[in-house]
Amino acid sequence: MNDLAKLNRLRVNAGKKELKAWKADQSKLDEQVKALEDAGFTDALPGANTDAAPVTDDPEVQAARPTDETPAKKEPTKTNGKPSLARGLDTDGYAHHSRKAVRDIREKEKREKKEQAAKLSPEDKQQIADEAKRRKGDLDPKTAKGKRQKQHIKDKQEARAKAGRVTKSKEKNPDEVTVADIARELNIDPKIARAKMRRYEGKDNYPKPVKGERWTFPKSAKAAIAKILK
Image 1: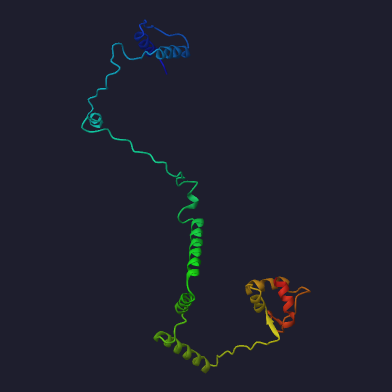
Image 2 (image 1 turned 30 degrees about the vertical axis):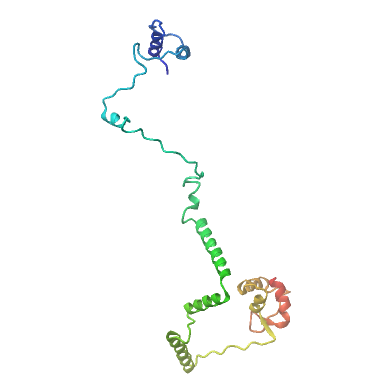
């Protein structure tokens, strides 16, 4: 804000007399100051050299000033980089361990795995499948570990036979069909197929299962079951 002292300095430099007081509005004072400054006068003290360099005895200021021997420090050049948001409220949802980031990483890994698998030859695919089976426990019987596993299974079966705990697999009746068999033919998960059958159970159009069974039906009911599952 301009004051009377500044106005007086401008007036003295303009060759005018100083004012003892100012009773008008502040806006009038600002207009007077602006008019004198626009005319080229400064508010420096009368007789002061306005072109002189500033002088100070502070050693830190003197050391920071460039001399003829030490050139002035250049400002770093700015490059026009790609604009991006800083991490904050807008980007915190995509942090390293967020659900979206982890899901995107998993999808990327699946895509890369499929692309890699497409480049493999049938022999390489078979080798990978064999190694996966061996890791799961289906060992090669030719190896020492495979022989031990085979003998262990044989001993276990003999022990069950001696204890009378041998369970024979039930022979499948060619005139019967299960819900699981029909679901596999339709490329449907058997669990989902059984869930659909539960919703229709007890209705008039529900086929009658085999006596003592729940998910086994006569082969004549195959079309009706397929209609329910579709």
